[in-house]
Image (cartoon, helix red, strand yellow):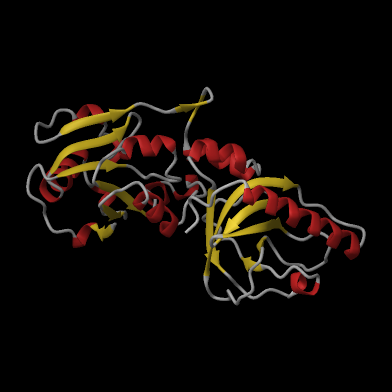
Length: 299
């Protein structure tokens, strides 16, 4: 899939693209319904709320690389990214349509979710799009799973609560988190479980404190999210991944974790020996769960 920043886009002939528009945070089942068989996805970076109302900005479900790869996995030909800033937020809905959808993209079809809004003051909607004869407007209704509406905000709440299994049913696959591996205090190695450690990005959603079965860079893994209460380290939140059957150096490299199931909450143990015994149990349980799943979204 080609990724193009809007300012670098070469104008396309009229009627040449089928375009899906949205922020697509999480690329969940509702987003996938909007994207459908479109060849082009038009999205924004940063998230518009980060510019318009930064105080209301939620934690994102996807980092840009994860979002890119998930969209690529849907068979999209090109991802066009709008660098959203204070100048762009002044663009009217009509300017957005005429300059970008018609003038640059040459859209023959435009797909949006029923609650999508765009343009200055969020005055643009599906009804406005449908007034244009240059393209066909496809409005996708909200998607429901198990009687609940699929939304990024709902998934965010499930992830924060540690309910990654439930979240995956709305996402269409495991919740993904990616970060760069940093050097830790070697505590896991001393205990026989060397971990790859990530200091979470404050802008991204992270599962609630606990131990999880996961896939990490394609390897089954047991992952702890928390502050390691058994040790008085004084360190903040860490994501610690023990990759099963892996021996290598990951420092400074990106690590992508697909969270499959929460095994237990984080707790303080009375002794290190007690902790090591429980870690062994966690690892075996993670191995069992991983063997029963497919790392279908972990690349």
